[in-house]
Length: 260
Image (cartoon, one colour):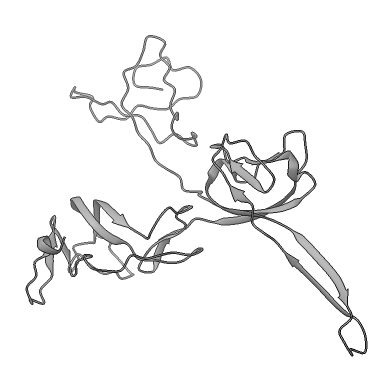
């Protein structure tokens, strides 16, 4: 990237694939993340940069960008960016300025028991990042120090994290796995231990659309990729005279043209 950005002393920002950038990542140290940390992205590749003008809003309130009374712009692009040395467990919140796409976190406890030795978290269906499993372990002991007037009691709660292994691996003591459905799996060797699971989940609603030909059975199933939540409408596609016209949603079995 160093050659692509140029090596001159000009203070003017250069362009990379049509996007203005002010520095090269060549020679920068690679971030090494330990635990859950904030880090900036290192831009490697950009393509498909677009700027969509948003409709201006009249009345009170203020905003930035877009010029006087011209509304604002929504910018988007396809990018390849680096975060840190891998591998990583997952990505939590994504920040841009003072805004972010949040990934809520949760902690749940479970005492490992048979016959399944599994636990389904409350947000299993939306689970995206596993942040680890730690067993709760307490200890207490009294010690008589030399010349001490009385015994000293030492007590604390500590834990050694379980080791995560790939789902489907035979589990041994101190290991666990998480299924694609978000279910935690434990070894029978750890029966009776109380563990705490930490994970992140998303409640983001994803809008999805698809183009279909109405089959002879007059029924189309949707939502195969994501769990269906709500209907956002049906319109005619193609290039005919009805292209873009919305169909009318009805209760019960549709009997008229243009209804569903």
